[in-house]
Length: 299
Image (cartoon, rainbow, N blue to C red):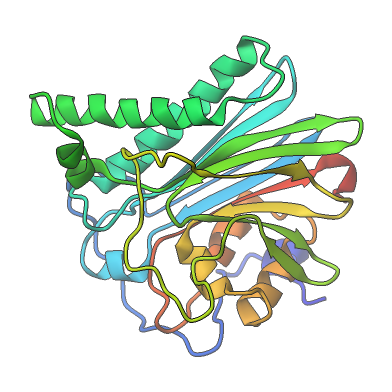
């Protein structure tokens, strides 16, 4: 296996990861504060007795060039009493004027709603209630920003965002995962030895049909998509925005091979961010990825 600078202890600057034909090179411009802003890149990483978490979110080339803020967000916390990890990933819609705020607020609201349910001792998360709480949070945020009571269309125009949220609970039979989503952000299990990526929700494209619109918070579908199950030995849970999912595709190409190699074991959080910021022509969206490994499977 090829060694990375972090593995060899080298101190040279990390070269940009290139997959196939790279995109154009330029120095990123600072984002304009369009209803709020956030850093170009964020990453996080920690372990509990039951799981190891790594996450990263990077601004896409299009937003870097046009001075727009990153519109993706992610958040995760551990519930100390149960060892359960509550997490969320969101992708603010480009048509919403303050989608950066919408994505970050939706993630925080979802995670803390899950944490409150765990404090109440619920045997299983009420994920539909979490979506409703996140939608209500966006409504309150829009009211504060507009200084008036908005209708759902006004909230949508300002803060619309996708959301994937859920929990990972370590137990005697492995890590039990429960997920729900609004929009087209995705989730997969990865078997690095294959490698094989299994989508946990309906793929963004179904045959030759490509959806032309995305349902997003603050609108909550009557029957949002869900998934629950246990991580099999050796599997990694991945939750990401379409900035990661689109170049990944079915996982059989170069992007799938790249991440299968580097996620066979947990990398450092900074290396995941560097990896996620790969260059490939035509793929210039923000990218966010959260990964979870069962602790007894890490090495």
